[in-house]
Image (cartoon, rainbow, N blue to C red):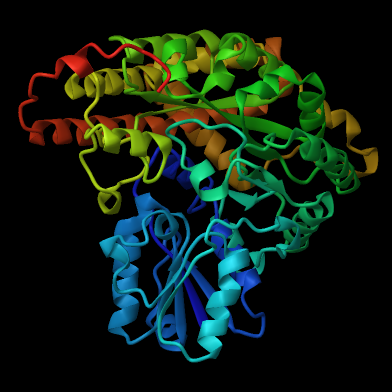
Length: 535
């Protein structure tokens, strides 16, 4: 069965990083890990090809070659997902769909033309699908019915199907699921609250596979909470450190974790020694009452400021997500987020308006209260250019305008340089460097691609723009005050090449949506007076 995997196009987002990727001559930040995992779970005697439409178009020769088309994606990819299904069907090809969008909203009209809906986690449903294909069944829907697979049997993803040089980073996965119950999060809906992990040997084998394919750049552990099972994370890290030492630390690592990482000194030290150089935290808001409303109680148990500082002290850069639009939120929430980010120095602060995602606790509560303004099939997913998809407890225009103002302030060029400078001055030195064997230490000479990117950033931020004095002053401060992190500092400054443009995208798209809204009706007393309380 000649199988063509087609990964749909993403709209422009906070994480698309086009301007940064242009600097280093790459197309996309991350590959479709789910798709290459599915490829590994299907019969290996099936010939396979993969086209990531974020990298290039599907050729006519590839459409002609295919006997089966497999398409997977997230809610934000649904428009292109529908377009690719239609193209395949127009050529008379059978189509199988799966992934987060199909699993959360299998009745969505974008999926109507698909022949097979392979829902939930593939370790369970792909064997059902293959059996149906082998029986000659022309259509089918396959579900895990609440069952969660043991991921210790998951094979190494088919990284060989990827056009490796198109990506800035590679992805691997150690765990699925999260123990917390944040009301707005769909991870626990899709993967459950009991984190399941691979064995250390499995993850090391995946790294070795990438290494053997010639990969030598960064790797993102896509776990939604890498420390959801701290015991197993601590079992992995010594093996990961040993592999990195034996191979001369070829990979820098990043991941996502809950804020309680900051309370575990041993875990932070182990991660730093493995060369984790960044971690994404779902901070959401500095407003404790809003965190309680969202059931994100783990963020209320210690000072968020101190948590960021502790993680940073281990040489691990904090990235963070923030949300505006919680029930009962007081006016000025956007400004309070800006103040928090400025105070802690977090360079990459992803911010968006709250979205009720299908089947989450938030979705069910708002549906019961009659406050949803879109159904499951119309859900847009999380993107920084989406208005709230429900009736909030304060005027939507107030929330949207606060959001746009805050986003623009966060990435104002002068403020960004100041924030990044202050952050790197307090960052701990990279701990992993002391473990690199002398015979495996690499030359520090940059590649031409990296040198060209650096020169462009220097030209734009240090000469052409009015940030020039701030740029050189900050560069000197970090070079003298914390030279061990100077390279990371320059890379992070380069990130604002994307945000400078993207804040204009956010402003324009939000303002267009606001202009199209009808006049806001007076709020009901129940909403207007709703206090901040746990839902």
